[in-house]
Length: 492
Image 1 (cartoon, rainbow, N blue to C red):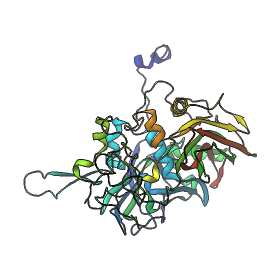
Image 2 (cartoon, rainbow, N blue to C red):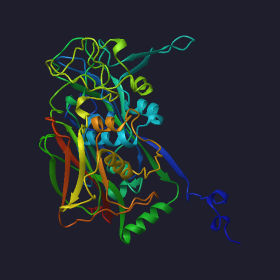
Image 3 (cartoon, rainbow, N blue to C red):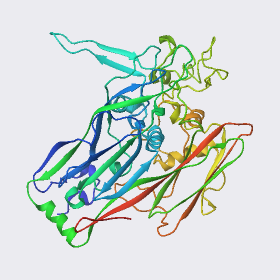
């Protein structure tokens, strides 16, 4: 008799898959080369367990953070990954993956495909999604529960975070995209993860009641460690299969990596045109954004509605409050006599606010853009310059929305309009692959291995603007880590 599943939908089948061999899963703790006293721009290195089946989906980094400053009270940015400048992975002494400007890319992607309202609580607990919120409680004693205390980090007079818990559980690049989620380090040799932390300019300050020339933003990380799960089998079936594949060829692991280029500042008064030469086995996506021209040299209070005022309880708002009534909390509160205006020193930004709730460092400011277009080897990838609405839809298509507008973790809940998208979260993403919804790892991007590919990005703006920005490009590439006998490693 034919299997029921052969001629009917899976909803009617009675098929069950059974794992060969008894499997066990144990949690492992990894101690980096430095566990405390870690300052901005410092680097730590973590070694994955040797001779183990390591589940990369469970790789987490934990730490405690204390912020400080010469002038001003500095607090946390949105997303714990905002603290990371660079991540690299080396296998058997060879660097196989390195992502520069990691925190900017992470903010860009997470805001567009990983942080809608359904993700609010989870991201808040693990990643500081709304860094204005501060909850605490006292040590439990006696026979009754203790009260939870709530306050706003952004409020004037708030205390800087001290030994505040942080964790990073979502990763870009090799750590978050391998085609084989559970890797065998006995075949790979030593696997090291190196993380360089960002400068103090990623930190915003509280919304102060007086103008301050903020300076000396810094942070110190302590109690740093990583965890992951390791798998083992009670019989040798799986290990024998791996050994056989190594003896007769190679083990191949696909993963995504990101190239990055940052260009000199350019004015919005004229068209911006940049060219970038890259090569790779499969270039899957082109990503363009732009940063404020002084993003890495200025310190400023948290960019959120109310930052022009005195930081009092009535003038500071959480993301949930803003999301609940976006019409009331648009731009900024410039009523009365705002403390920070365009005429103040240090310079004020009276129209920056809304529900951005992040540091000035991470503004992707595309406001005023009229058209945007990618080209490869001088051949445009679109019929013409895309309008702002077309840019947004092209980006959504490239992220896999495919006009369904269904995602498990979509747009940041404070991207209320195309205007908000352009002003704070701008990205133009162009996909070069055959988008496949299966879990198979495909190499379907542009192949320029052995040669160079000239990527151009052009954008135009509405006339009259003297604003300067820094164009930034990323290229997502699919790579293959090929593992041969004797731990011979090749990256294609």
